[in-house]
Structure formats: C-alpha cells, structure tokens
Image (cartoon, rainbow, N blue to C red):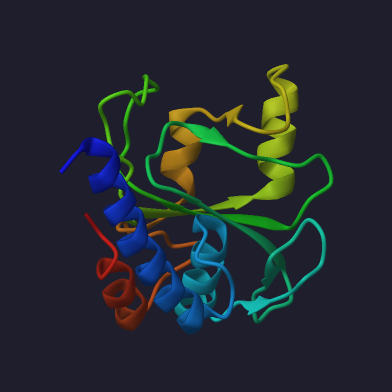
Length: 168
C-alpha cells in the first residue's frame, strides 16, 4: 500500500469518527466545538451563539472557551471580549516547529483567566492583544484550576474525574 493510499484510508476512518463525535455534540467535530461541548458538560456552561463569547457560567459571567492541544504560552484574546477565558490545554511545551510531532487532543490542565485583568496586564507591558498573545508563565500558573487546586475556583471531585478522562 502506498503512502497516499494509507493516508486516504486513515482519513476515511477519521471521517467516520468525526461523524460519531458530531452526532454526540450536535456540531462539527472541530477542536473549538469539542472544547466548548466538553466545557459545557464539565463546568455547567450554558452555550450561546453570541459573537465573541461561547457561553455563560451559572453566575451569568460570560466565557470564551479555548482548547489548545499543547500549552505554548499563547492565548487568543479580544480587546472587547468575555468576562473570562477558560482554557483547556495539553502538555506544556516550548514554542517550536510542529514538524515531526503530533497534537493529540488531550486535556492535562485547565486555566481560568479574568479577561479584563489579562488584557490590562498585557497592555501595561506593551504587549499585543489578539491572536496568539504571549502570556507570562506566572499568569498561566495563577490561572490554573486543574489539576492543581485553586481557591478562587474550586472543582468538585466529579469535575476532576471528568477532566481526567481526557488527560494524556
């Protein structure tokens, strides 16, 4: 079997799996949609179709959910965005070429950023706000709510068990 034939076969398999995932979540099986659905299930977020936010927590605060298969220290931000950014992330890795690597869909950590605070911090340092904004390691660590415990947003045992299902 040639490499092209093997890739075609694998894509057919992937399309079948994506169709099954889509039937579960009710949307195309893209990483953004999957992350939003997982976040809704685990955190009780009510998903919305409003531009710029993905949903609301039970307390009414708006949230934009991101899923990054690798945590590279970058975060897609908006000048005028949600109240919070909830980031599902795979393993922490230094920025590098993707050549010869994979990006499995895993969740090893979850971060909850106050949107106004993170934007203000970046502005104060003269940093750009937008796609792939560079966020300091200390801010990622302060925002981590899983697997580490965070007093500002504690998770239940059930939430921790659900998130562990997606770990690498």
